[in-house]
Amino acid sequence: MTIHKVLIVFKAYVKAELLRNRGFLYAILSLSLWLMLFLAPIMLFMPQNVSKSYVASCIFVAIAVFLAYTMATWDWAWQLRWLINNGVFEYVLASGSSIFILYAGVVPVSLIWYMFTLVTSYYILSFTIAKPELYIKHPLVLVISVLCLFLVLMGYSMLLGAVAIASGSAGPILEFLGWIMPIATGGITPLSTLPREIQLFALSTPFSYPAELLRFSLGISRPIIDPSLCIAIAILYSSLFLLTSISLFRHQLKKLLKEGIKSMAMI
Amino acid sequence: MVFLDVIRAEMKFVYADIFRRRALLLMMVLWPYLMTLFIVFLGSTLGSIQVFINRFGVNPVPFFIIGSFILLSTLGVLDDIMWKPLYDEMVGVLPYILSSPINRILYYVALPIPRLLIVFLVGMTSVLPILYLFYGLKGILLTFVTMLLASFAALVFTPFVIVCAMLTYIIGGESWRALNVIRPMLFILLGIFYPRWLLPLTLFIVSNILPAAPVVELIQRILLNIVASQGEVLSLLGLAIALGFLYLAPARRLVSSWERRKIREGVRI
Image 1: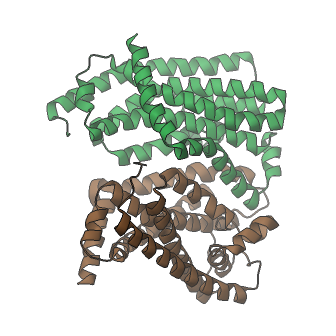
Image 2: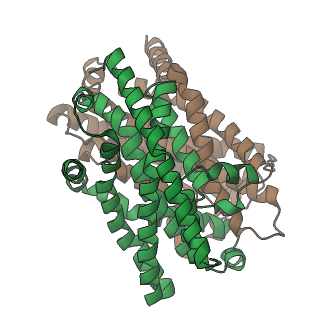
Image 3: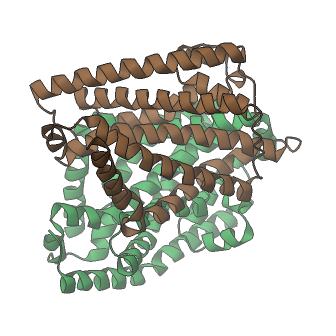
């Protein structure tokens, strides 16, 4: 029964987000152009002697992490606000189904979209800068880093969602976080290239460890702490972060059932 | 008089919305800083600021803060004109607008003006402090020249944006998805972050159909101190004005054609 509900949500979102009005094609085109707009000026900083493929690889990982944050913010956390603004959230709650069924249906759609955007980004980089050199040097670390990144992002979206339904905070705040968080937590560039203060801040959050491991597994850079220690912290910290966020999210939902839904701005 | 009335009405509508939602206002102030931080941060960690300085002779921070400001001012025009009919249809006021006797070109030209005034204030909180920090008193003058030219670029861009929006509506229906593709494409062609004289030749040629492109180029040339002569300034401005006027007639025709189609089909409310 639960799987059936998840499938219904999945099908509905595939139709609405990817198939209707050629949404998928337009979204891919739009994303490619936005990426070109922000990536082209990066080339103005590049010395002649630096390998363009290396730069393209770094940018590719930066895009992968940035898009993952974007997905967690706008596909997962913002989903609750979208449901509230469209008057659907009450029905979801009244149906008696767990809200996590919604997530179980939406997450695969986001991941399909994410994979396609990564492929698109790869070709855009190949076209505008150079073909990214991506060699999997540590397959196990790659798997761990991707899983940890997923856990952290799920936790992040639960946390943002809980804050959004509790405070009625607006889209611009999420937008601000969406830009600042990947930069400040070492998602965009290796921690070794950041000032000491930002390194310390990044290490205090669960976000930096999976990103550092991801770059390490692809042979782009080494983490600033020992890789084995980084793996241990990544697994522990991301699991703990997800569990804490889920409890907070559940607590906010219970509160919302008692107090009712707060009014929210359209955007 | 009617024109001023429309501007006043739009002002009430836009300002009530912006000042009610302070988070949005705060984001407008922070946007130029965020975009500049993003590009300069990524550029300097993957490459070097010195390379940029050697290439252009200026620090990237003023260059990109100006670029971000131009993006915001252009976005004001693009969004107001392109999305307004969609928004009006969604909230159910499109039938009233279609049946009003106002001159359509004046109406669409009036739409972005209130937001442009807000963007002007955003320039005071972003471009002014950064340029003052880098260039001292000369930076203040540079700020006003930049803001004046950016506003001018936004205004001459208006007829082209109307043409773009109406063509999209007529060919592909009122699709916000298609508009989302047009927006970044126009920014690339305008050369906001990557000067258009560095674009591949084909893109550079295409960019010449955009009335705002010569003005954006002029702003960048002034900042980089590579304006050859007064004649070059005048020719770039002249080109922008000529292109702006060139799109007025098709803009009027396309608006009326789209409206006729809406009346024929009926408006969804």
